[in-house]
Image (cartoon, rainbow, N blue to C red; front, side, top):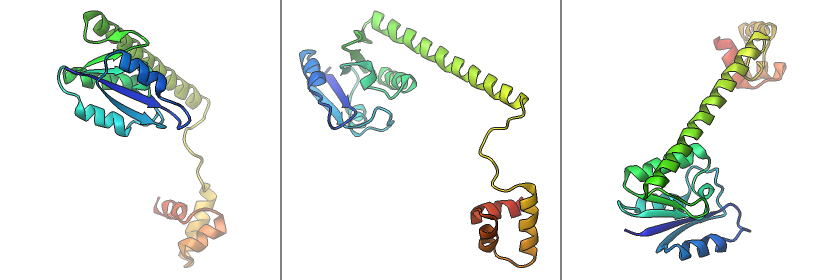
Length: 183
């Protein structure tokens, strides 16, 4: 069993010293560091290496929970992956420790609230889309060509004009002309 640390700082100007010192104090024997790597990236080279390295019985230690995942869902997915592989997790700042029953319970509670948050966002989104549709608004990007312009494009095509010439005439891309003529 080993304590394996993970450090992440978002910009090259930030220093990992605070995290590094805290992990050393916590007894971390090996550390992986993503320096100047945004947390919004799903794939981070050193986090990926850490996930390949850890084994059953190891404990992944971070200074703060937000250093691990890019958002709640990603963090919980990583924690579930670690748990499935028999790897524990500790967050020093929040005092979370999945190696004990209280830590596992706290992570479960956090997961429940994250799921509730996702469900509420989904409900609000669906309600907002339905309200917009009831007001006659349709989502998506506006069409490049009106029905009249599509008819004009078809007429030009029948007269023998090429797609690029038609696109230039109507001020749209050649791909828009191909889509309009195909439909």
